Length: 167
Length: 167
DNA sequence: TATAACTTTCAAAAATATTTGAAAGTTTGA
DNA sequence: TCAAACTTTCAAATATTTTTGAAAGTTATA
Image (cartoon, rainbow over all chains, first blue to last red; front, side, top):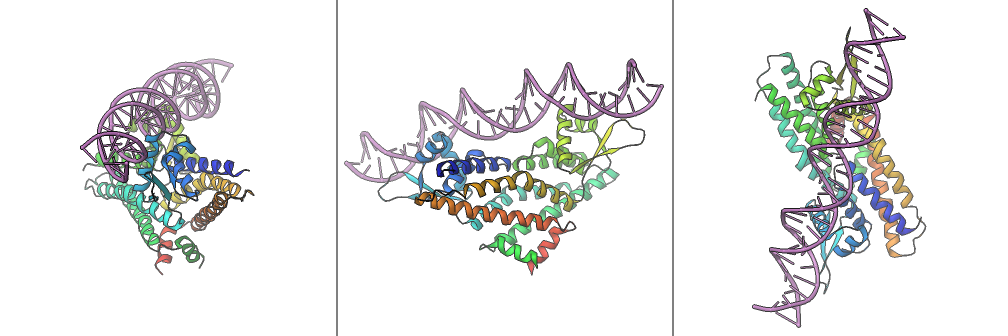
């Protein structure tokens, strides 16, 4: 396989994986492209490489920066903006985990707390509902605590975690 | 909040959460509905409750059964099929994690292995590409091993994991 | 401060994913 | 064997998400 072929395959695969996990395909592709780019990349170059419009590139770069996994870089004497991806994978995973916790898991926990707190527990159906949603709240809450715990280590947390699990 | 209201809110929220994680909204809603149903539920009842077509119900129930998180149940003297959800949350999380590993992570790892194995490492760009994709393979591979490790405990693995992390 | 070089916005268009519903398929039991 | 009671399939319709591109906005510097 040639370099350009491999690069393209990687970008496509990362994009598809993103889709499967609820991340816009183009967003994942831009991220993939930046991850394997040795130098900061201009919007123009991203548009060219991925064959996407200016608007699309702009919006998805903004989203990636909101996630905190892509940064702007300014070059001496250059008017244009350049972009680089967070390349430290522990940091990348931490940012993604934290962000998904904040945006998706915590709001879901709030709903679980609310619905499991209904007083209307006369029927067998309602009793079961309360029991299940309480269990679910507990479980999701534990998983979320785990994310907090794990992401505060910062450095090499995945490796550390595996070590712990072995013991 | 009334029971029926709470139930509906839970189903909607679980559906939305599913969407955000790349799972068909209706599939997640059916799963939510079954999770909090005290008794096995017929396809007719699912269609009625979620206001969906027969085809939609049939296809998504099949998908849930393929994931191994919903089962068919036969009732004495009843021609119809009834459905129940896996209600043990450790088991549920294990099944989902294993399935996503098999369907999505392992194929992505294969691609990472392929693209990081290119020989064409003359340029700085190619060298960087190889280095990054190797690191990524390593990281994703470790995360995947972690899933294997964690899901083989079966019972109460999340709680155990938290204990380990504390120490 | 005017203009060129750039980025962002957003309504409309396009692409993608989901849903429908009717026909085909299957199973049970009279 | 037949027909009733059920489930599955899939092409077409619908809904949702993503993408485009041109206009508006911004910023640097002549």
